[in-house]
Image 1 (tube, helix red, strand yellow):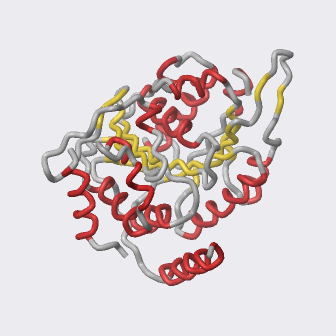
Image 2 (spheres, rainbow, N blue to C red; image 1 turned 60 degrees about the vertical axis):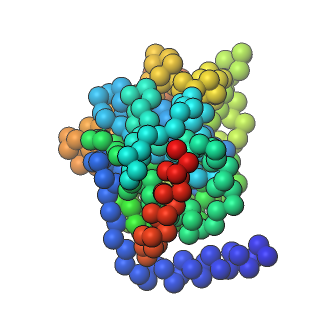
Amino acid sequence: MKDEKAGLNEAMRKKMGGRTFVKNPIPGTKYTIAISSAKGGVGKSTFATNIALALKKVGCRVGLFDADIFGPSIPKMFDIKETPKTDGKKLSPILKYGIQCMSIGFMPATHGEAAINWRGPMVSSAIKSFVNQVYWKDLDFIIVDMPPGTGDTQMTFVQEIKMDGVIVVSTPQEVALIDVKRGIRMFDKFQIKILGLVDNMSYFKGDDGKKYAIFGEGGVKKTAEEFKKDFLGEIPIDLEVGKSGDQGKPIVESNPDHLISKIYLKLAQKIKLSYSGFLSILAVTISGVLDTATSFDVLLLGSSLIMLARLISLL
């Protein structure tokens, strides 16, 4: 059954590959940056929340869109328990820590659980509803926390939504890098610029001061070199990062002076400058910070509207 499903997905991709898609920008925002991992459990959502907060702290107007329909993390990581307001046509994002936020996890009665039984078309429809039928207001950047993998959800984004760049987050594990390579090929096929790769949870420092690379070492950098992409650097494991996310106040917000926060802030500043026109190409390296810190076809519109109407009816 698994092989049969994989065959059907591949056949669908080949069929859709020859079609022309119109990539529409997300209304109300200048630039869309997706945070992708291809593999789950590598800290993608932690990265997405903290880079969004870092961009806000360097003076940008920022939105955070939780596109992980099956496993939304933003409600927990931002400690948001309220539901979005609506005028009957569109939803208003929830403002937290100065960030405009939207997630399927905000929906009452479901909190994302109903999405478990959704199939590809329903997922794609829901995503487009959130993207186009939310009052994103005058954003410089919207950070999209992509779901892991390279399936229907990801294909919806790369084919139909204008993305100005992607940051790929991974651990150095070979099993994670196999999926990362698949993701890179997908983005390259649809000519979406990959801003670079981040080696997350690269190591931790023991009480003895030594570095312990428990997930392997150098794999993400080698993958970046193999595909001729920028390597953005390493982000080490730190207990305070996980704890702050669990408590609903990510590290950049709870402790902006933390060494990990400084890595995010440095990267955010360079992203801001790049898209502000001061730099023509994003050539970001976190190594300098680490050296001084601690080294870091369109689906039927009717279906989309019906989906949104169902969600709004719950409010």
